[in-house]
Length: 160
Length: 254
Image 1 (tube, each protein chain N blue to C red):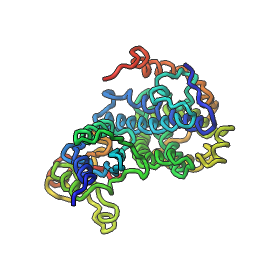
Image 2: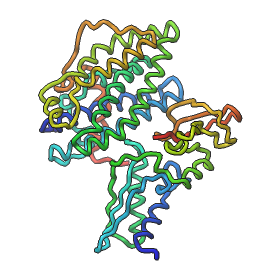
Image 3: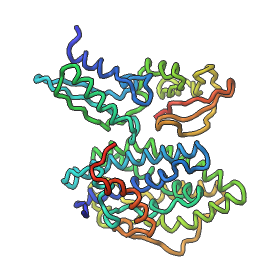
């Protein structure tokens, strides 16, 4: 049975990230929790990816508006800093979408690094032979790399 | 409006927040002026991280001093004497070498400070610190890379790095000063006494400067006073630029 809270969670989670619209805020792990009390009051917790992330205010407004549009007018969106956001929270679907979007996904501490799959693969040709051009890219969460095999320059979602 | 904060924890937190905000503004001044696009992006991204860290701390200070003031009140409505940042962060950008040396000295200090603050008894400060540690590690990496490249580079880049170090080094003493405020918060477990950060800072800076073939300069003077609201001449001009729009058009929005 789909309860009202599941539905709100699904709809809020489907909101696209303002800077990477291919991904939703659920994919990125920014949406942390949605709760509703007996009176119909909805509480939403979101977590910023980076301290100064300029997308956060937009996300907060989007979440609030989208839940109000569902008929729940009593909404409070809270920014929660602890526990701190990490790229480990990115969903598998999110990682696939990132790659299709042309951004190399962050490597996973538990999965990739321990199994020695430490290369960042080119999202265009899959080659593991890539190198970093710049630590900082077009957004706080991205670095810039180049593929040694196909020559493509591509963004890499940094492990964080 | 003076906007003085009360209480050791609030004052201590304000010092950290002001360091972040002022350094953020200095780095943002490089926007569209850096030698290459990558550096332009790097410096403005670091500025954004620092701004976010400052906001997190100002939000906490408003609770600590019980005033509920906004982040904007702290940033834009205080005069020069109410800012308690260290003088190093307000130092003018100068050439790229000066900015990179300042960035190495500051980010090494800030990283050690945020690491210690992750264990703060103040949960909100600890939460901001946990995030900031990861960000600041990147800031220090970038400054380290440039220090090595320019220090152990051409005669001209080496000369400029030496010049920058000589100008900035005296201002580092202030970073590690203890006073009644720092001793009180250290006893409460809110944050480290700055003096305790010195060994880690010394070890890292000594190693990087050594690798970059840059001798640590001889210090002949030791400016201080930032934590008490005394600032260098350059700071007033920076503040005027930073606060001008907010003060000239109260309540303006995008």
